[in-house]
Length: 173
Figure 1: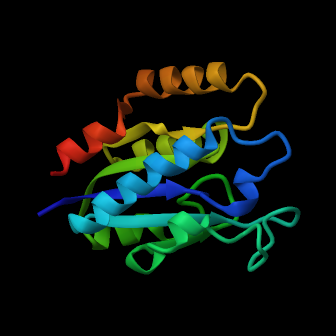
Figure 2: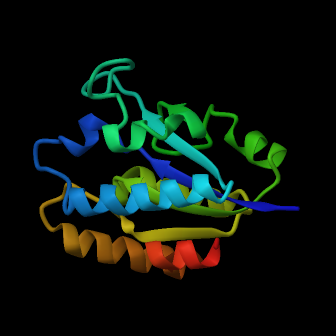
């Protein structure tokens, strides 16, 4: 039997602490943790990604670490370390998702117009039904509301389902 999977992208200290600040960061983290706790309680596979780069997300640095509110649930998740915006490149993720018999992917995290967008598009290309948690992603761009609205619209036109935290909970009760 196929089962859903929750993928939360780059909820790391250094991403949230970017110079311009992540728009609505507290609410994004709060909704992400609600989804995370629900998924764990319902036995839904959880994948948490950690992006690594040579500037502000150096592996094992404080900035590279997951947010504390997310990290405390990480023992119940598969941690996917990545060096690219996409979650499939050089990661073995597609094979892992097939191995655990994954059906739908529920995706949220940071940054909307970067790694989150890339994860959604790549997942669709890999044949997975994708649901973007519309209240669980954000950006640090100055015109954040417009960027998020534009990303939501672009992804919806591409065939990605937009759902809220509440809808995620209801669909996976």
